[in-house]
Amino acid sequence: MTRQVQDAYIVAATRTPIGKAPKGMFRNLRPDDLLIAALQGALKQVPNLDPKTIEDAIIGCAIPEGEQGLNVARMGVLLAGLPNSVGGVTVNRFCASGITAVQMAADRIRVGEADVMIAGGVESMSMVPMTGNKPSINAHVFDRDENIGIAYGMGLTAEKVAERWKVTRDAQDAFALASHQKAIAAQQAGEFKDEITPIEIVEKAVNLGTHELDVRTRTAALDEGPRADTTVEALGKLRPVFAAKGSVTAGNSSQTSDGAGALILVSEKILKQFDLTPLARFVSFAVRGVPPEIMGIGPKEAIPAALKAAGLSQSDMDWIELNEAFAAQALAVIGDLGLDASKVNPMGGAIALGHPLGATGAIRAATVVHALRRKQLKYGMVTMCVGTGMGAAGILERV
Image 1 (tube, one colour):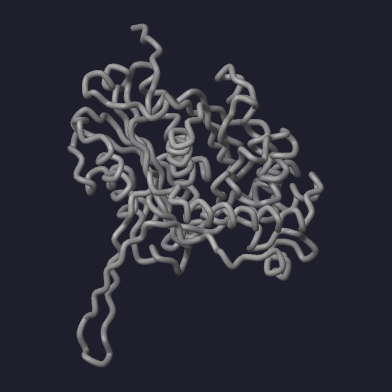
Image 2 (cartoon, helix red, strand yellow):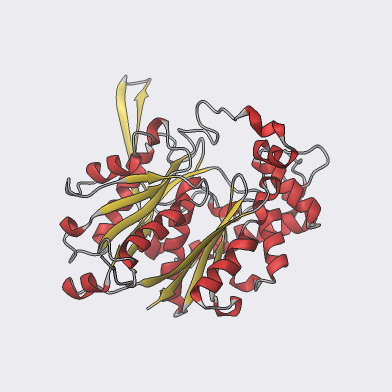
């Protein structure tokens, strides 16, 4: 049977606030509960849509074990109150898991296999450490020199990129400061409001004086990471953490974080059937591999590929969410491709806002969707480097 290629439209896009890990506001909140909040927030944006029409939920997670194991996608779907008929699958492309989930959901619609899909991502770095609870690397990695980079920590790969692309410590710190400044300005201007689903946090503690249980409730509506008190002087005092004479510090690297994002994608038929307003059209996606020891440069290869697939040029992009895994790699990509820095992370990036690994791609997709509409722009991109040497890029169009 020949399937007709059709467009996939995003009709809902939201995310939770991002909390710091491991001791931030979501330290006691399970990742599947974060996912539930994102899923329910997305559904609220499309009250006309019959949930029974949703066929599957594809959810990205970089370390799918522990509290975010047991197919967290299906767990989230069921606990969010969706019909039993809605499936759920968890996918892992490390930091690009979330945007890969969006691509996979869009492709199911574009080839005519589905009409309504959920895509998203979730990660709790407070509850599940970055390398998992039982990391184990294949010893054959060390058999050949070209594979040794697989064993490098992410910070060391950033040092390799800084060295090869001649990104100075001063440049990295200045980039980090700008990330915080842009994020704080965006928060103060209320620019994140449309994309964030607030979460109620319930904290319980025993009152040692009364021996009673104190219950406190507060609402989280903003990302926890941005710091208004960050200065270039303070950043300059931080020591390198990955190489004795290096330039990569905790201050010019992304924050470990907790968060989730969710988007709902539909076909044109569903748009008409339920009188839905499309927020954006999914245009193209590309992933490319690079040497593992310089994994941060991955977007340099993925961005041109995604643009070629879309039939667009770099100048057509109005808004670019380039995940700031490290200032070193972000600056290397910007410089190598000649990206317009004014279009890159206008509201700050992962250095200030945080990087909950497998959730980040979906979170930043929500950012792009709402930014394009708010600013009346046409094309936006989500792109990031990926551990073990990959880059991913997805392009969206406001409609």
